[in-house]
Image (cartoon, rainbow, N blue to C red; front, top):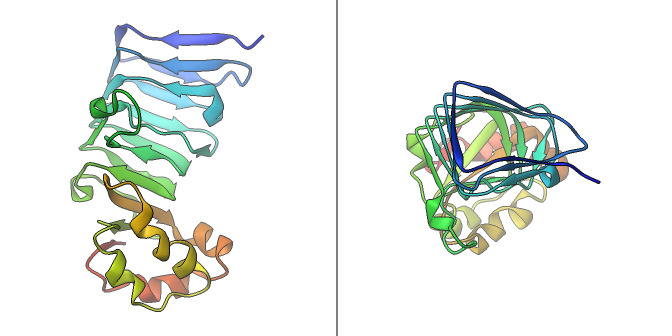
Length: 205
């Protein structure tokens, strides 16, 4: 039987939480507040359950790639992220599920993280420290979809990523990719992608 480890209904300050037992399922929330804590995640997305909670001035470090885990019910303020994140969502995703309005991502630092196919909702990406090249961020992907679709993109990046920009949730304010990873999936190179991305005012490199 899989043990469930719950951190809920309390406030924790200045502690290190090791979420590393691969035989356990960890729950952060509901009604959890972490202040100036270090959260080490060594389990996959299925073993990490994120309910309504607040993380303030915390460091979140993933030891293995965290795939497809929404952080949209978590209010993140002044937090630092490290490690590899794929297909994760941050911020208030309008209408995603009950309690979506409690989500937030403010004054956070992702500069030491590798983000690939990660979305930010309901926030100005310029208020965040986002990872720089070889990661890149598309600001206002829905609003800029038509403009970006008029450009010639290498490999399958245009048909798989750019043509789908308008289909993202309306709350999507930014979309971040890791160029070498997306290039490998979509039959191009990071250098070919950068040649198109450079000079676009909606791209953060």
